View 1 (cartoon, rainbow, N blue to C red):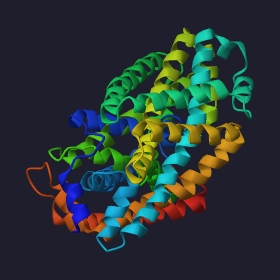
View 2 (spheres, rainbow, N blue to C red):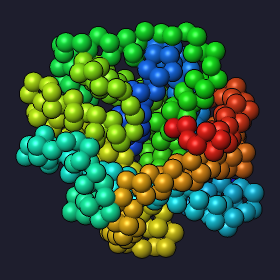
View 3 (cartoon, helix red, strand yellow):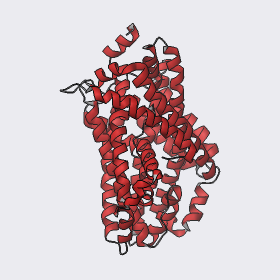
View 4 (cartoon, rainbow, N blue to C red):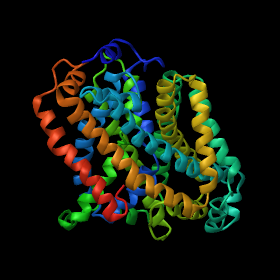
Length: 448
């Protein structure tokens, strides 16, 4: 271990640290819970065997949560810095710190790339929320309304507002700001979706939706696609990117149990996905609408459902407020991953790096506001850049930094040290699966 590495172990991050495990877990849940939980998981659950899909999904969530999330938390806390510094730290163990620093730009670009596309989509959410409040959402046909806001330069005010909100929440404090935001938005997200799920339960005809989601079709377990899609859904749902969770790990105190935090993050992320499924699909079936996934589910199908539902305007507003909360907390993590790395690497003021991140995201995003363009952009980022960044992170942590250092960090804050079998599981099961996620994502054109 060189002098720089020793100094990093001894000093807390310049941005401070999370005050307790609750704040840390809520921040991580806020990062993990996003659009994939809302517009993809419900459809995929029904499409690939209902409750039978949950078996491989839970297996992969447990594996990725225990070995994937923990790796990113551990290296962040050990290096006491985010993406660029953490990769430099890992590779400095082999005398290749400069190479590690350069490699770290790949997952960092993944975080920035997702933030660019995510801010466009969140702009649509905000615009639809405002239309729900004013009644405009129900005055027009849903497809027509969505076509207008997802056209080129068709939603600049709301797109810009989303970026400004995310940046403002980060400028006024790193760890404290992130904690405060997530301590409000994440509980509110769960409460709002519980209200929606209860209301949907009493809709006539909702039973078909529960059948679609929950009746197990065991034959799907013999379909390799079921396992591949469950693997992809779990991997991306937990926000394993080789970047975002590293920066949150760098703000974690040494007294906290990383594996316990990983368990809680995976648990609440899964509960969020199940809540979304129970609130959305039964409502879709209750009104005889064909289930789908992606933006069309959220911006075309569901407004059509709310339009037919008693007190539909009220529940439409509840839904899009919930989605906005989930999206903003995820966007904050992406911005933080990028701004922290620029702050630490280039010794720039924190406010400047946050603003710079927001300006770049908005400047690029304005030119991909068209639905087809942002779709292509997100496909490129999520199929190629992010999975490769996550794979690079897994290799850098478990093979380059080495299991000995990872074990030492994971054992901090625990009564018992981490078992040796954990290392074998990480190196010989998790890393090969991370390779599979990257390769299969390219073959299938996306699995998460």
